[in-house]
Image (cartoon, rainbow, N blue to C red; front, side, top):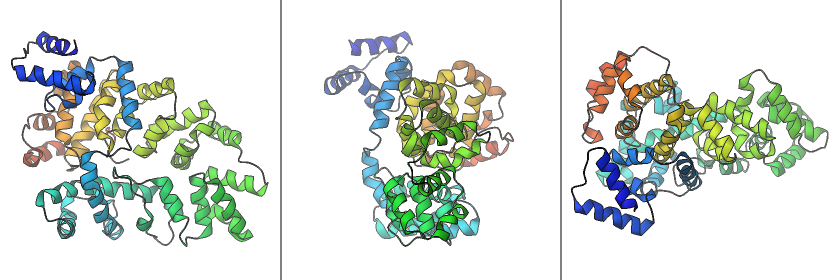
Length: 436
């Protein structure tokens, strides 16, 4: 029945299935996997119809399948198993910090020409197969972004430009396991006050209490010079008064604050205490963090899975553009189309074009290549409303858009020399940045 329905779906759009082999393949996929779900992933991966088929499925079904994927995100893909561990090893011994200090910007934001040659030489010492070297080179930007994001979020514990790369605990997907990394750093000879702040950030209660006992009175007083975070302040009060951490007080302070940036420090800790907050406080914290893009993509995933279904749908509906951007980052791009199918009805035309500007100007033009963003964008364009497409002619991104949509070859042959002059004509700064 599913095979017949799919063929009718094609026929309704004037595209008759002529090859018996295709129908046979669909039947085989259904027998092996038990349903239409696998057709979306396996059938004719270069075809636009797989995305169209996805669009016509019920929203509840889409969302259910997305949550399954998000729960399974810790299972590495074959590509990740093959290349990520080599990429991590290369990045582990590459002096990012010196290069970033000299350029005063993160490596992932530098022109690729500035570091590509030296990085390729380093990769060549590890791998003999040229094609594998190129695959790993594609991972350098997202892996370096992981490192830079971690350094940015943990500036409070950085002592004399400390380098904690040896303490990083990497996952097989190419992200930093922040909780385990924090536990590793607590075993180093870092200053006790900074260890205390780090333990507070990750709500490591046993470590918090143990460190407090080992700190001198002057160290306890000077903790606030390391971090003025609300969480550190409340833990300090609780320990001095010898009582439990006051969750209600934390919630009241969060809700009474007029400054959304008070949640910046809290957002780093949010995945580790979200369920301890009252539902309205937790949702407020999460929503504010999304709106200002305080959360790391993996933190976003972990927090989202802690909400109930109604709360999850509220987040997707209210912050459609921000949610879409989270799934444009490594390693969550494989869920991008699931998310796009859900948020598309909530995406305003203005936000749609803000996203188009972002992916063309901030991702494709700046040579991010951890996935084929040209192919990803073209598929996203296919599933977009016709009214949005028609109005693209009036938008300043239109000429650059035509260059991207007109490319039908492999990514290595993409005409960057045609795209960049057209991107340079775009003067609007209304779009969000790719790297928050």
